[in-house]
Amino acid sequence: MSTPTRWTSTHAGSTAAEHHHGALLATALEYAARGWHVFPLIPGSKRPATPRHAATDCDGSDPWCRGGHTGWEQRATTDPDRITRAWTTAPYGVGIACGPSGLLVIDTDTPKPGATAAASGEETLASLVAAHDGAASLPETWTVATPSGGVHRYYTTEHLTTTLGNTAGRLGALIDTRGTGGYVVAPPTTTPAGRYDGTADAEAAPLPAWLVQQLTPRPAAPSSPRELRPVTHRSAYLRAVLTKEAAHVSEATEGGRNHALFAAACCLGELIAGGSLTDSDATATLLDACAGHIANGAFTEAEAWATVRSGFRRGASKPRTAA
Ligand SMILES: [Zn+2]
Image (tube, rainbow, N blue to C red):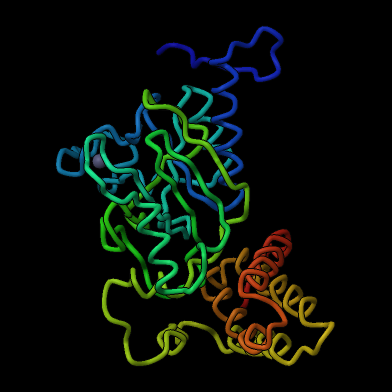
């Protein structure tokens, strides 16, 4: 075994390659801090570095596969120690596993050279947005330019109860989406084609409802999504906490709404950190409780969502379990 190569970003004589290596690790850690699950890509490539075998060739000799084949999606992590260990050994590209990260990425591409008069994915997407949303553009969100001239827009799906997988061309020609079972190559990964670059340094916004509808695998069930949420596994105590916090939010009056939402998110964030509640259930409860305020224009869904995330982060510092 050779000694892993170490990089030092502050080293006076550091080369551009060492600097890039440091940026890859630092950025992977930033994504993890956002709750995005990252995994290493073979340097200079878009393919996962591990596992090095396909599920069909799995012989169980990889330590990760002792209990059955474990693919890149399950290996993707937000654990800073694991990320630091992996990226210290090689200048891996950064993959983000969309499903575990609660992300749905809209991936537009440009027509292949030589294609005649075909619209780009961006043009097709703009027409779709105008037709479905009456808006000039999609909500501002975390956006990446790919080396091939494509665009990746990251949207969050944590507020949804449905699981969205990958699609190819369902929204339109040269528009793919990556969800559960999919990943994106993220900045500052570099391939022979060029570098992936962030173009909008914004928080990832919730996936707009009309896109959720377009991307949901089956026609929507007749009942409303909130009725489908599993509640039977919750203890009476947990149900009481959720009801009380939701009431604090929905009954808050002008001037106190944002504070009520933040306080409720802190409380539920403690229970998420303690493992008593899932992030998606807590988010759904709080956004439902905000529905009246959002309808009144007191805040937008994106603002409510940002307050919820911020409360969860605060709550995470005080993990608590519900008996
Ligand atoms: Zn395996």
